[in-house]
Image (cartoon, rainbow, N blue to C red):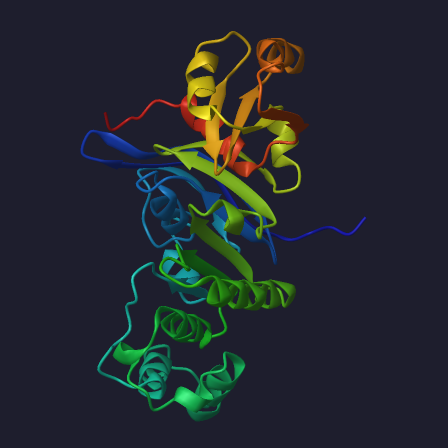
Length: 309
């Protein structure tokens, strides 16, 4: 059995602002070359968690290592091997693509800067636009430029904070193809998102809500670990059906997915008993299905208390 190197190993990370625990007792292990997704609603503590894990923010409590260095006492060393792509485009809009990359390369004191910038431009398809002002780029091209700037100093760890917000589906797909290529080459990637369809691109997923980690697991195992069961119903009268299903024993939650309802619960037998009286309703089509990440997320959120209330 091949032993996989652990790149991040932290325990009990906690961050407090005022009287609020923004992150509460967070543990995490990440193997090299993994794409690790942090899934949760806005304001849940995803970004704060990622920044503490990588030594970019000092925790109030907890300990651990990142890239072999202590996250508390050796954070400056960690920063030299981390690339950080913020949610908001943070490069200089009045500079060209090439000028932005050249400036970043100088800040990181990159050797052989011209060739490294040329390689970055070629690698992300930016060469033909190298003299275009960054401020005139679309969301997808700004995303490529931001990623190129993060990778100029050959980081071992890449942090992506809501990287595809405001980007069209085609650009999102191309972006994820690039991310997987980087991971295949040994770069470890932490990405925060609230898009369910993006979470499935990750090798591992951690659900975070109100500063607490609700669960983390390999993405292919997460649904089974939660143990949720789901029925799908399509047809007419779904609004009335939703009302009739509320509060029925055995049903954890009912959620609308386009033209269908997904009814979920933890006890398979109790869930079937709860929905079976409605099987005879006219114009409805029922089927049992495996729940997806969104049903799991709704279930986890429904049992979590908002610590900012």
